[in-house]
Length: 246
Image (cartoon, rainbow, N blue to C red; front, side, top):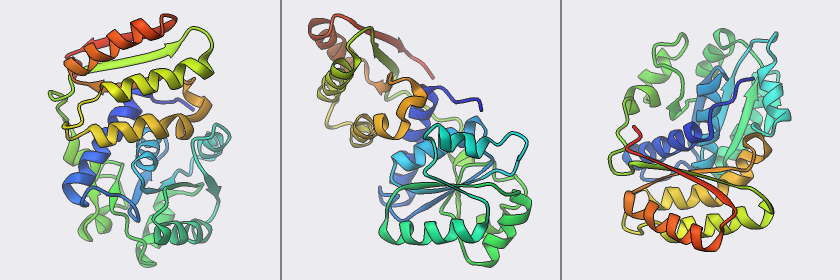
C-alpha cells in the first residue's frame, strides 16, 4: 500500500471542508463520501472525509493487493467487510447518528455499485473521477464529485505550507507545537475552524501511519507568528516552511 503524503491528506481535507461550506451548510455530519478504489487518492480522501465529519465507504476489490485489509491493520480504516449488506448495516447507524466512520468494502465496484443504487444508498460526495464506471446514477441523483469541483484548487489565501516534527521527547513537544500553531491562526480566516479541527483530530485519525508529524496551510503572517513562537519555546523542533506552494 502506497500512502499519500501528510500534506496531500491535509490539503484534501481542506478541499472537503470547503465543499462542505459551499454545498452542505458547513457540516458533513450524516453525509456519505464514496471512494471507488483505495489507491493514494482514495486513502487521502477517505481520511479527509472522516476528519471532516463524514461517513466514508471505500470500495476496492483487488484481492491480490489486499489493500483494504492492509489499511485496517495500519489504522486507516475503522471497519473492513466483505459484503455490501455488512457495509450497509454499519453505515445506516453511523449516518443516522451523524458520526464519522470509514468502512472498507472488499468487493468489485462493478458488482456492488449497481446494488448500492438499487438499494437506495445514495452518496453525497464522490472521491473518484465522475467518469469512472458505475457512478452515473449517483451523479444524476445529486452526488457532488470532488474531482470536478475542486481541481485545480487555488491556495492563494493560504500560501504557506508549514510542517513540523520533534527531534526528541515527541509526546511532550508535538502537543506543544499544536497549541502554538492553533494560537497563531487568524480567527477571521474562513478556513480557521477547519484547520483548528485538523490540529485537534488528525493525530488520532492518522495515527502511527504518518509518523506523528504535522502539516498545516497558513497565511504568511500566521507562519511568521508560528515560527517565532516555536523557535522561542521549542528549540529542538524540526519546522519547515514553503511559501507560495500551489
